[in-house]
Length: 107
Image (cartoon, rainbow, N blue to C red; front, top):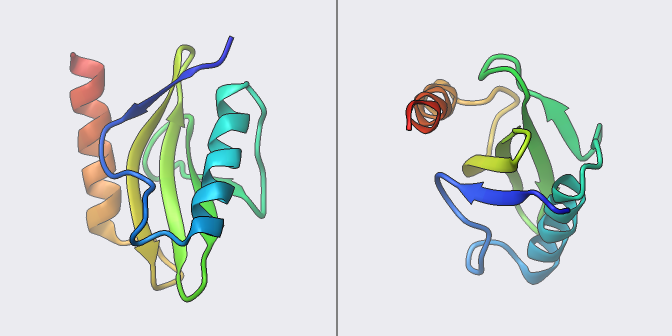
């Protein structure tokens, strides 16, 4: 049985994702829903955000997108969708993801 996608923030749509990037993101999210474990170059762990947190890496025409997610037993929790412009994940993205996890877990 596929896991639900729980969108806490952001969504994959056009604009700004190109059609090809939207399809790639959809394929990778579907794999996660089916329980597949993804690794580099598609996904990497994000322990700075929390346990079971990762980021999908989607290369688009002129930008690299990131989808920050957490793998729960019943869902793939989408924490953030953003375009990454530097090698480091911005502190505000990390902080907002931590807050979204806390709010999600408290409910």
